[in-house]
Image: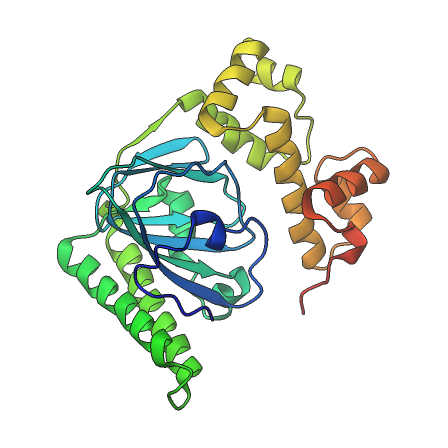
Length: 291
C-alpha cells in the first residue's frame, strides 16, 4: 500500500497513473495539483473510482465527455478508454481521491454493482445528494487516516482493508438506491456511441471499415474522422485493443489461446500472437489462468 500525503506537490500524474496492471487488491490516492497536464487516452486492467473534490475538470470516457463538479464520482470500468482534461489557474487546483480496484477483489466481495450500473444507466458519472456524498467522503477520509498509521498500528493493513470494504459497501448501496444520481449530462456523438456499442458486442465478427460504414449508413471517411475526434483512437486501433483485452479475459478464464484468438475475430494465430505481444508485452501462452 502506498502512503501518500494529502497534498504531495512532488507527484505528477505520470507517477501514479499507470497503464496496465494492478498487482494488489486496491490502491488509494489523494492527489492535489495546480499545473495543467496532458494525459493521452489510455485504459487500465483494473477499475477506477474517482471522487472529485475541486477543480475545473472534464473527463472523456468511451466517447462521452463530462464536465465535473465537486463531489462527483467518476467510475471507470477496466479496459474503458479514457482521459482527463484539466484547465490550469492559480486558484483552480485539481483535488481528487482515487481508488484503484482489481476486478477479482470486487468480485470476491460482490461489490461490482456500481460498475455494472455504469453500463445499465449509460453514465460514467454519479452525482449523489449532499448527505450521501458527505458520508462516502468521510469513509474515504478514514481510509486515508488509517493508511498514515497502518505500519505502526496493530493489524494496520487489515484495518485499512476493512475501511476500503466499508466505503465500497456504502458506495454500492448508494448507487443501487439512488438511480437518479446517474444523470449528469454528457456531451457525445450518438453515432460514435452506437459504433462503440456495436464493436463491443461484435468483437468476433467482421468489423472492417467498409462493413461498419455500410451498417451505419455512413461515409467511411466521415465515420473514421468523427470516431478519432471523439475517442482519440482510430477505429482500427480501438477494435484491435478491445479484441486483445477480450482475448486476455477469455484466456484468464481458462479458454485455450487458440480458441480465444478465433472468438475475438482474429483469422490466424500468428497475427493474434504478434498483436497480443505488441499490446500487452507478453505472449498469449504467458498469461496465467486465474484459479
